[in-house]
Amino acid sequence: MIISPCQGRIDLSKLDTNAKLGLDKDTVEKQMLDAQQRVASLQHKLWAENKRALLCVFQGMDASGKDGTVRDAFFLTNPDGVKVTSFKVPSAEELDHDFLWRIHKAVPARGEIGVFNRSHYEDVLVVRVENIVPESVWRPRYAQINAFEQLLAANGVTILKFFLHMSRDEQRKQLLERIHEPDKNWKFNADDFEKRKKWDDYMRAYEDALSETSTEHAPWFVIPADRRWVRNYAVAMIIAETLERLDPEYPRLKLSELEMERLLSQ
Ligand code: AMP
Ligand code: MG
Image 1 (cartoon, helix red, strand yellow):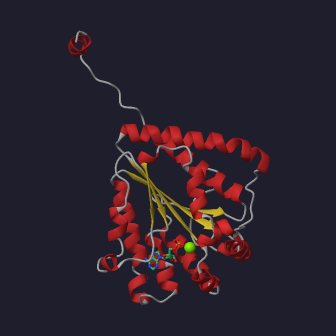
Image 2 (cartoon, helix red, strand yellow):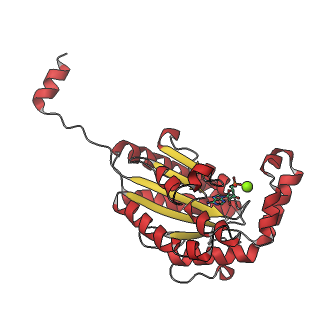
Image 3 (cartoon, helix red, strand yellow):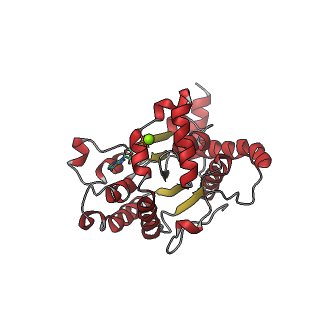
């Protein structure tokens, strides 16, 4: 793997948001298409095999590039087999249920790749930092999430979780582009600047989430996200390698000689 999964206690201040992972930009630009093709052809096999699913969870601060990473990693895949769900502030109906209710409904079916743009982790991140529920409610959620993901894994869902780790300075640059560049204005949200003031609280919440919920069956990867080309390539490579390990197979036709003869004679 280009990056190892999180293990033990995570200190985000020790993980470089600007890392190049030993890559150089020219080579990555040439190899990206190859990584995208690997993801696409394996997705096609996963879809045809129709037995197992892959779930990719994306988390990160505002403007860390969740949308762009998803677009790039799945660029060549068949949209029929890839289901992207973006989790927003929960609706009144969703709030009337447990926090995993809306999540479970969006889990990919056999053969599918599910992509979560934000996820159940918001319920231990924004919900914690903004004091939407008391600690007695959010604290037990780490164990609830681990049990939920274990259930999915035991039922044929392979889970990968990506934290797009960007610096506070890079976020400022990206958020300002949303003001200055007309084709990015639609992404502008004054609330992002409010959340930015609580950067350290968010980092602490992320550190707890990554430390408490990176498991063998649902590992977290901290992706350096200041350089777009590193971020997108690292994610595409981890997905490609995971699909390769799953090694999905096209189902083989099983016809007896007699059936074959009958079909061919029609
Ligand atoms: P965006 O990703 O820019 O479309 O924004 C979606 C917003 O929904 C973000 O501000 C999230 O923090 C927020 N959000 C997502 N899930 C939850 C949740 N469970 N509780 C509260 N806010 C949430
Ligand atoms: Mg936003």
